[in-house]
Length: 269
Image 1: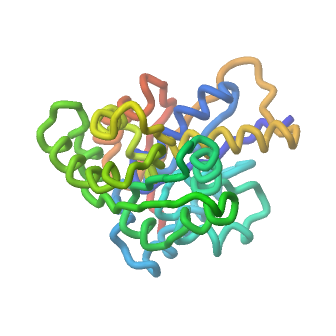
Image 2: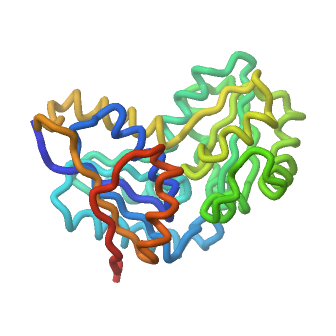
Image 3: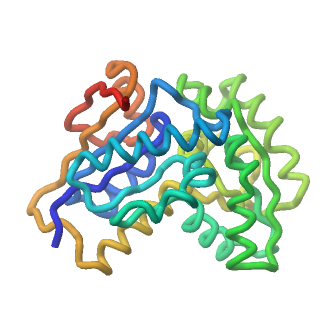
């Protein structure tokens, strides 16, 4: 047994969807969440900048007594993690491999869609991973750069003309490809799941990358006999690089009513 916390990080609030799933499957675990809200989004940054930010995020979380890290940022998972994962002597789980495995298992017609940030799409990480585990599947990718800022600003409800218009423009090309499975390649995207599902239709299965990453780290901790043995629920402490008030106001949409024990503003420098 291991009562140390699980570290989770993302560029903003989106990684809280992974925290939500972790709290569902591992309610006794303590979680330390880092949201780099002062620099969100990462998806339009250069590779060099993404690498720098990722190393700072890792360094911050390693300052806590943690037993595993969930990289709940699609951009870092696709651009930086392949180089960095071996640098740390603890389990590190990104979103690519778990989501790719799930999508490959779900598709019936072998045509998988991916929506993600520009950097994630440009990396080709999902295509490579799916080609490795299921070379007979096809992947069709679409960058959706406006989704993260719209989600961070609360434009998420079905019927909202802004998110509906943007989502339809991004998703129609994928509909035309006759995909039957769609990877939500950024942890912000489950917040607009209903909007996406309404456009794609009931015949398209949606894969939540953060949820799959959370399930994977849960399996790893069980297999390593590293689950917490405390009697009650664990706590979730959040660290952000911008406004605490703004983060707390919006966190509920991502956590689905889950409780944050503490939020504080931090510097990553």
